[in-house]
Length: 128
Image (cartoon, rainbow, N blue to C red; front, side):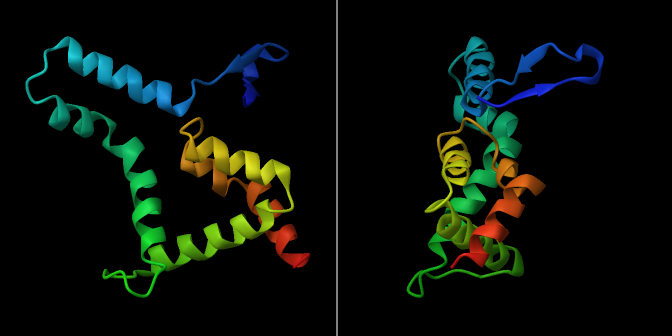
């Protein structure tokens, strides 16, 4: 799991919660208030976390010609980048791991856009 050092605790490692645990915590909070309207309350609270993942999933469907839907510049850019990431991840186990962490909700999708990951994607493209 990814660790990071905070500036005030140099030398002491902290661990971030896996992405899915954050969603579970939100669900528990909403369930504590009762089951009435749980879906609406959960998705309102977790919307920002879930929205990016949903956009990637929907956008990947739009790669196929037969799927109807508007292909915005954002959708085309994300699909282009994800295709490059997949191609590079075939040869780079670190990229493959980063993708699987995101796909399994261990990390947020923004993990795939970090400079170190983007550089590995770019370097992977030079080998093809």
